[in-house]
Length: 175
Image (cartoon, rainbow, N blue to C red; front, side, top):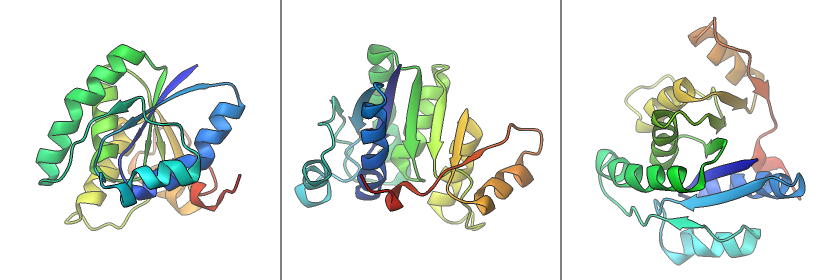
């Protein structure tokens, strides 16, 4: 099984490290795409090296800009990677512009989306991250929640939707 992991910033690199190791140990084929949301060495490459992450097969160098500009720059590159790699699932983390772009590109190509940290809510729609959370959860096929509260948030929002699994926060896992 091939999984395309979309990451773009420091918290995502940290969260992806234990899951990436688990995927490799399970014999799954993980392809990493780095959007470039965080792009300087101290916020990017250093984490890949220190955490033992596989180098990204795809680098987009999205850089800075408004939320709309940054997300828009990511979409074509993620879409190309999905078409080239033909993953069975696209894996996204958290609530960033990289998360939203990965989920949207995959969903438009009818590729299932797995969302790590699904169901988290601030209930403040003025926060860009809150809008990303709501949209990504709606686009996702697999919802991996870090707490029972997150599961309850999803159940309240979409009562007819399938149950979500509760997973430990990946940042707490150690290899």
